[in-house]
Image: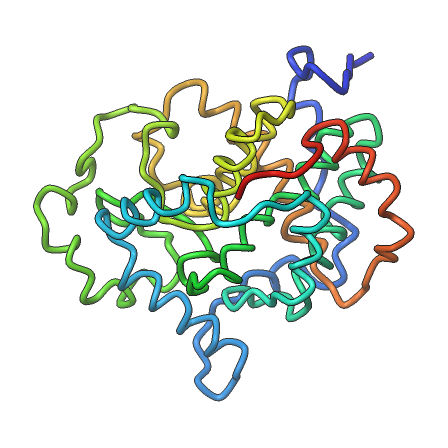
Length: 292
């Protein structure tokens, strides 16, 4: 009999939580994350253009500038619910799978995690807030610096990055010998914690939670921090930068990925009816007003 505890998670072997391919997806799994190029398809072209701007403009210097700006946590204050409700007005321009407000995706992911692991309420909360950093888009941050897959800046771009073949053309870091080699400004096996990731909602929300003294377990915070790092957890790139501890993070990110990716559909949860349960988790793990 496996031992499952809500908190702490030290006694949970994540390999025991891995389940077969999801049967709850409303389309073939191969149809998710379709980044094929079709200039006649407005959705696909919007996605491609968002990544083009990201890959052109995300540099070591630009990320440093955004970290300096956003990690002062002086942009606005809000409760988790108030911040989530802002996502009613946000459609992710990098997402080829759904064209609905981002708050719908938050509840879709959280409810599937809750259905499969009712005892892991920290996982439900993690799913609910994993994209909350996208609120940056309401404060003069372009979506290419908010949404989409992430990757380290300051080293060679991984081969599995979407649109890798030509979308980095013109990015000055690609011609800088300090940044364009396999390890770039990093050391072998330096660990994910020591990488400077492309700027986006993952890193921002991780930092917001830590700044506001969340009681979430560290693994939950790491899920939020690296859930969009698809070139690593899905593409197999950057393993030479990992430490053994990062393997544990990867297992949990892959568990979470089932809810982040395969729940995307046109079926909208009854968000109003779900608020009482999720408010109880907000009160448990990150209550009150947060500094963003």
